[in-house]
Image 1 (cartoon, helix red, strand yellow):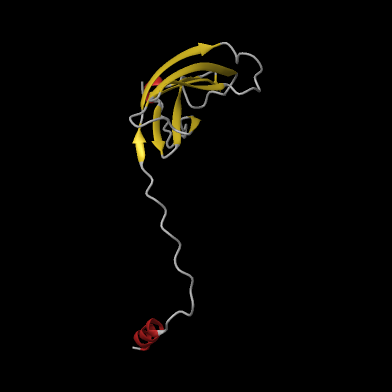
Image 2: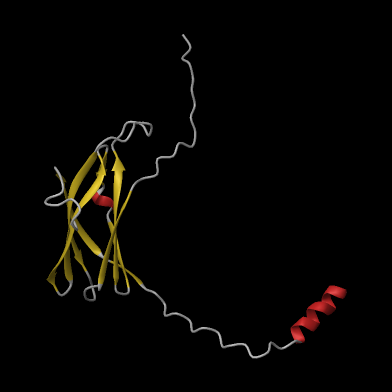
Length: 152
């Protein structure tokens, strides 16, 4: 009963001169983008390896071409079918997934390898203002291991 009276009395107290709540941000719309990808193996990064290795060019008012060099482990490759892209307002997000070619997740990582990605992106409503590209490695976590000796 005491808790009920305390809650009722706190509800009756009016806050003194609080500022108005902040305005709600505009709703962010995510729009899918059509991606045509061509992936080729590359020997090394052309030119200076520290230089920017991504080139964005305008094909027409609704199409961009993004060419970049993807750095990865020698036992990984780019999953061209898994490349995703979407647009959030003026920012274009591109995710390039890597796939492991190792026989087991326990194989050590070795040498650096490169792939050349050439992406053609089509937009239904004009070009974005920014392009962000992320390369993602698959998670190679061992969640269980079983060992059994064969019976003869």
